[in-house]
Structures are given as C-alpha cells and as structure tokens.
Length: 190
Image 1 (cartoon, one colour):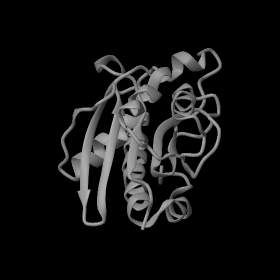
Image 2 (spheres, helix red, strand yellow):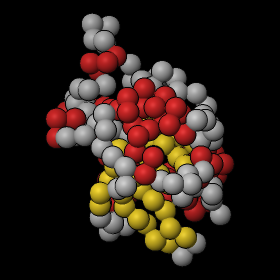
Image 3 (tube, rainbow, N blue to C red):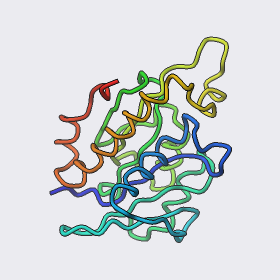
Image 4 (spheres, helix red, strand yellow):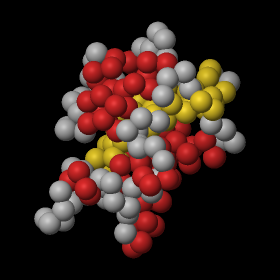
C-alpha cells in the first residue's frame, strides 16, 4: 500500500495556457479525474480539488490556480500536510518529449513551480513525477518555450505520455512510489 494521498498537478490558470507545455501537471490530473468520474471544486487555497474515494482511503487531486512560480500557495489550504504523502506532477525541459521520471524526492532542477512548492512546505522531501517536454530550439528562450502549445505533430506523443503518466499515478497510489519508479521511469512508448 502507498503512502501517497495527495496528487498535485502544476500549471498556469486560464484558457490561454491550457494546452501549453507548462500545463502537463493539470492535464494529467484532468485525465485521471475523467477516468474515475471525478469533478473539480474550489479548494481552500488558490486551487481546484477533487476527491478520489478508494477502498483503502481517499486521495486528493489538487491543481493550483496561481501562476507556476506561486504554485506552493495552493498547498496552504491543506492543513497538516505531510510531504511524504505528496507527489507533484510537472513538466521537465531536461527530459526528452515522452520520457517520465518519478523520484521520491530531489531538487527543483530550476523548475519554478517545484521551487515554490519546496519553499511553501519547507522541504524538498516530496515525490515528483516529471513529464518530458524536450529542450527549446536554439532561437527560443526556455521561458517562452514552456508557455508554447505543443506542435500538432507532437500531440499524439503528448497524449500517450499523459495516458502513461495517469497509469503511473494509479500505481503510485495503489502499489507505492518504488513500484511506480520501476515500472515507469522510461520513455512513454512514444
């Protein structure tokens, strides 16, 4: 049985950012919520929340409604948050498109959303699921790249990656982080 009971998807609010590279955390949780017939409600903090009731206990799906660099604010609506029960889902520039990486803890790697979470809960000792978006072309700054939508030809690979990420989160919740790391730290069948 897993100790993870809070799935926190990072992204930016609003339609403008809905299909961008930076919103893979939100997209992954939207897919997971859809699979299990869950709906979204306003959270206590700047967030949207969904509750996934399972036989072994409840799981909270949480999406920040702040911009990426203030993502940690959403966690302030969860009193008594235990970092070892949290997994954060986000995009990653250093991984090729389609690659997933699950870790039990670690640094931010320069990801401003992860930095905000670390600052908010005062530790880096939380799990994360990173979804590869690839590196920007030489003429495009990384800060512009993450806010760009995926190219039409990339979308099938992205959709497969999202499906695999949702599968991985289900395994994290049911079997634990170690099992999910063994099964999913690879390219997402792209």
